[in-house]
Image (cartoon, rainbow, N blue to C red; front, side):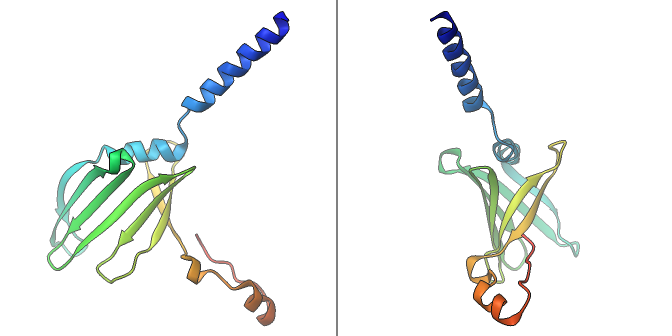
Length: 137
């Protein structure tokens, strides 16, 4: 009986530790939220740009708004399980989705494109026309 109590206690400690451990995506999202506020800088061609970050939706999303000379753009960041996602609403009218990955030291987050479902290769077409194509993302 004593062995069973020790085993159950050990299991409870393990479960509590797992429940409180933050995933890499949660840590990265928490770091991004520290950007909340307004920032001023220069665009790729030296034009003034203002960027604001705002935590929204009860802390579950971060909105970035880029205000340029011509058009504004918005990006939304949010954790999705073990992934950190970003959707960018571009002045060009598209909405690329990206998945964030933290560097080993946790100081840099790199976002890579995630192809939308309509752009995924059609496996039937790949079999018909030869070798399947691999897409980054």
